[in-house]
Picture 1 (tube, rainbow, N blue to C red):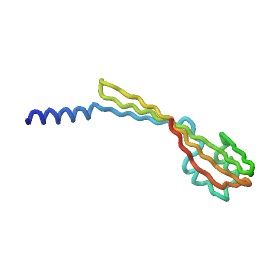
Picture 2: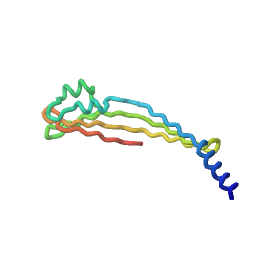
Picture 3: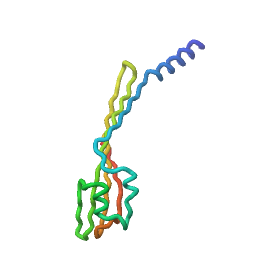
Picture 4: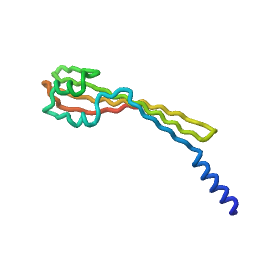
Length: 119
């Protein structure tokens, strides 16, 4: 009984040492960060300020009521590898896109939000 318990404890300990996890993240395109977004002020920030802070938007949507929505995208990639020593290895790649949408009425920011997509 003691031999079995000892063997089981050794097997669990050794198995824990044989599992490896390696993760790497890299930015593919960064236009804005959280600090930039916190500087946006609804009712105060205008299109000139947004353009000078974020550059030209990826997309501009114009609506019949005169409102506009400008979209800015950040893209990043995460690569995670999980393996059990000499038995198997799994590589998982994930691409993440965050879209900052800024809504304007009469040239002034009226709303903004961030959407996240993972592929």
